[in-house]
Image 1 (cartoon, rainbow, N blue to C red):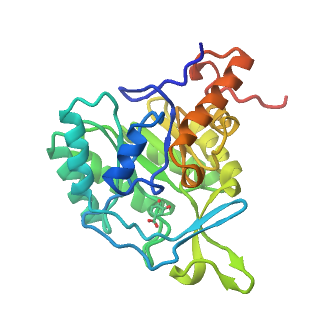
Image 2: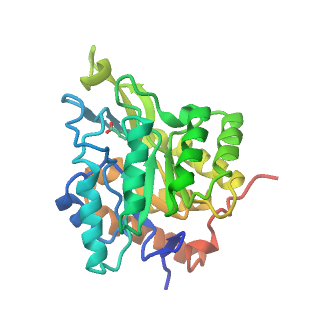
Image 3: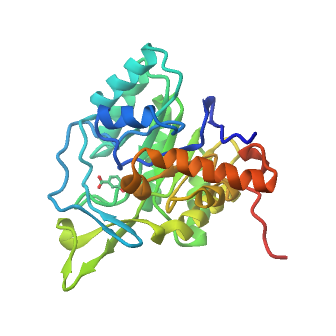
Length: 311
Ligand code: DHB
């Protein structure tokens, strides 16, 4: 019998597949739907200090190969998600989940993380360093100095398990530089990758989303090769205590298998979860198990990171 169970830090998950932040995870109703599905866990919509309405509509569109979005961090404010996760913790719900957060400024990020540090929350937190869609705000993790300083400041007071969500990188030197920064800190995980920022999709003569005159984050089939490269580049460079959540272009068991082969310990599904809703977790799990059975792998550790090269 094959198992897709995994762990991130000290947290165990029955299934390595889960949602990616941003898709169908803004309300408790949506999070409960994931919690009661075959997904191994859920991650919340990235929460800011205060509730946000996000960018004007239309702010997301699909193409045959994926999605473009410029949501602008709509969310219910981080206390909504923290209170919900604390209530699950109190009920001793058997599953761990991930709280995704970021401030609209460094100060706000510190307020959020200090509040979590001082709360009873014992679960995983993912700090989103890669939202591409807030006008005037850069993707933090493309600024290496700011990222290093931010993490340095955070780890002076933050003692709970923390991960960071990264944007895709496209240069070997950038993989080296970012890995050198991340390796200085007691991070539990990274999540690689967020959407490829600031793409442009055109229908006839017009952009398809309203914010930023059509520029938005790209997901889906377009991004799988970039996602796999990022997962593997960080797998080769990070200290083993920093695990990797692989995200980007996953819609089948084969895609999840490739992410794990590149080194991912957990795999998130974004655009395709948007299309298929919660049944996708069982379908992709079954397809992954079929591949594992065919190859004689019983657990994901049997092939995780064991990508073959051509001699
Ligand atoms: C949004 C989009 C992202 O890709 C992300 O990581 C965070 C937020 C958004 O626009 O809401």
